[in-house]
Amino acid sequence: LSPARAAEDSARPLVMAHRGASAYAPENTLAAVDRAAALGVDWVENDVQRTRDGELVVLHDDSLQRTTDVEEVFPDRAPWKVKDFTAAEIARLDAGSWFGPAYAGARVPTLEQFVHRVERHRQKLLLEIKNPRLYPSIERQIVKVLGNEGWLDRRHVRDRLIVQSFSADSVRTVHDLRPAVKTGFLGTPPVADLPAYAAFTDQINPSYGSLTAGYVAAVHAFKGVHGKPLEVCTWTVNDAAAARRVAGFGVDGIITNAPDVVRDAVRG
Ligand code: G3P
Ligand code: CA
Image (tube, rainbow, N blue to C red; front, side, top):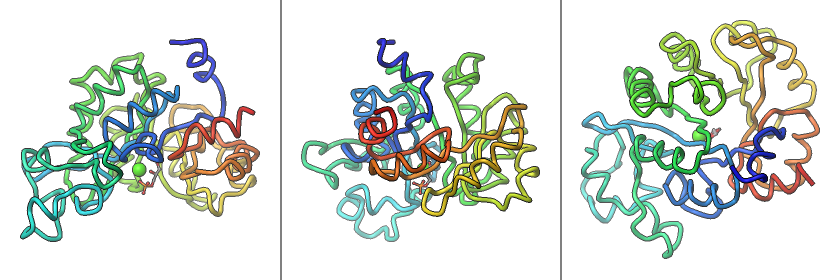
């Protein structure tokens, strides 16, 4: 790693590129991973779902409509749900032109392709299991792919991988399948409920809008499933003033579309 990347490695709060550096390149594409790397950003967040024929792909919405040309390519397949398309069909789609002509031809990556690119840049992965109720047993499948790709070895598990979801059941399932993997719950549970979450997660990751210093301190007061204080990574913070505000609350990570803006604000 460059000296700058090494310094960033130990700096807090962590700066995490949301769907890649998605302010500058189409979200959840390899181009967005590359842009995060070019900005010197270690952590990349993504969203994982499943195709009709069982391939794991990286896309945020449960429909392909917003971020691909699926309407043009498959006009009769409304509402264009990921789960209703095969991997081969999705691989034909342009996932970049909606963002800008420079990205024409960008593809919806498979989880394998995404992980390879993160690995090539020696980055770290904040993997979100999206809409798990649509995809029975997706947790087991994600764990299998991560294992096949070497992402469950000790080095990756220790400090290069976090698996998170809005579904507590999904987070708990990942923990039960691979107890060593660091996990995060997306949401803002009442403080009284935090001990229950701490039985299977390391992080409580709330939206930043109504976040308070008191809530961050309350979360930190509990130990997570691996015996360290529960962490807080908040989203999606895209301007300097909000980044400084949440950094002042003592958050552990900031998930952002514009990681350069947030890094400048919190390290400045
Ligand atoms: O990483 C947190 C954030 O991504 C959760 O919201 O809708 O952008 O997936 P969303
Ligand atoms: Ca996400």
